Length: 221
Image (cartoon, rainbow, N blue to C red):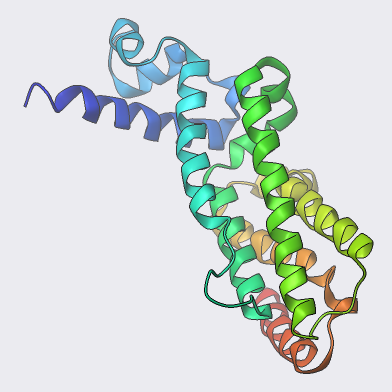
């Protein structure tokens, strides 16, 4: 029991910190606030984490692990449009779970060198996956675009996905934490990113896309 207790406390600190960072913004939460919410002493918190950056880096490690498993194209076949749609949907859900990273991105990166380097790698990986998905569709004659167009498109998709929650926050900050409002916001973000590839789709893939898009738009009405 003594061996397991520190791990449980550490996990509780991370869970609470993630909730507080998401709800109020990471710059507005101190280790003192976290300790008070946990009903533990600051010394107990510092036993598990040296400072707030240590908590942030630990949360980012969790996020990095989850997104690393997600950032992969099918290994035994070429991706289809349903894969692209599902990939984006799951990506937006993960971004929402760790939304403080995206909401406070500029501030975090400006003062956390470790985070700066690792987040840069994630962005580069996202672009590579988007390129691979487009190339897979092109190989199946379902997508018509040059290599240069695919490179630009992949970058644009990642830019929109990365900053979508910031856009939604600016649109309606008072509803930013409301579950229903943000579920709709994530659906809009997924649709917005996918709409970027619509002009390049051909044949049956284009028809499948239109069907999926109609279903999404119906949910947003």
